[in-house]
Image 1 (cartoon, rainbow, N blue to C red):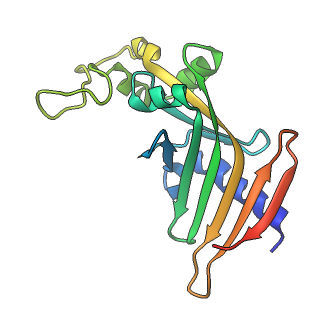
Image 2 (cartoon, helix red, strand yellow):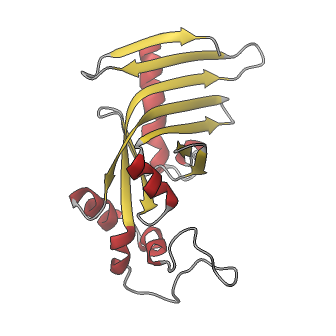
Length: 186
């Protein structure tokens, strides 16, 4: 197995995930801040730019953590293949700008509607619910709460779990985009 081909295969899997609702790689765990992690939906992946894109509510604890410290780790796992990918990078946050606007305009209403919730994410409710108003035809007011995190990936670790023995590799890109790849002990 060639390490450079394996690195390209990792990105092939990530790039395909946002468009496949059945892909387990579409819903990775995003870890940020001291010990905080949550499942997110991968909205875009770009192998050339080495970026992963997720959405969040600008009022959320996750957004506050990313503003304070943009370093993140994302964990992807495909149980069918036994492959785990961990990607480390820094999140560039976009709210109210052209990047946010382009993702907002491309997203279906069902994706945009949660940004209308009141109160904001993580705040108490008197009864079970989602904080959303009743039937809403205009989701545009939710744009003020919409935040796009574009994560610039600098390192990926690939792990294949197998009964015959686990295998792992690390891929790191320098500031010029040059790849350093090595096999590592799982």
